[in-house]
Length: 112
Length: 109
Image (cartoon, rainbow over all chains, first blue to last red; front, top):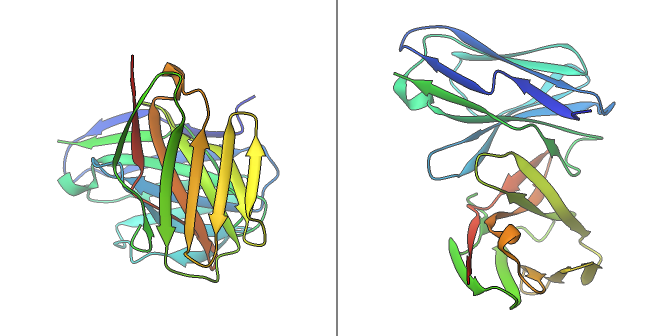
């Protein structure tokens, strides 16, 4: 069974559209994250949720809105997509904030 | 990865040892990590070390931590073609994990 799964794996969309990426973890972890990996493979944290509550928002544009319906899910909704949003988005989870994180396989978003 | 630095490229001959180095600035780190990313894949946690440890060994992997110099290294013994990947050094800061920019390990035949 996949520990951290995200869908879709690939997403190609036009500028201005709104899209969502879903993430689920079956590890029983209480903290979930979204990371963005750019074309140079640099990884930056975007959000962190602990028990469904937002604890980190790394100055991400408010076009990005994470939603955590329960502690096993953290979805990422992006409004008015821009070319610069093209990247690979990784979901991750950990047992408690800041300990080792287990990552999903990533969602490659391409905005055209 | 503004406070975790690592070189971007490393080439090693198959069968040799690979040593990937990392430096960090914040001495209050409690956990330091090594992640591996193969092409088109997610990040795989290879190993981690607590800040009160100097060394950790796990099969072909050896992690060395020099707290005084804020230096972390990952040694891969008997490097194989399957070790070709990007290796990320990371550290815990507050409630998040901060990543370095990754070292691309290239295996020469």
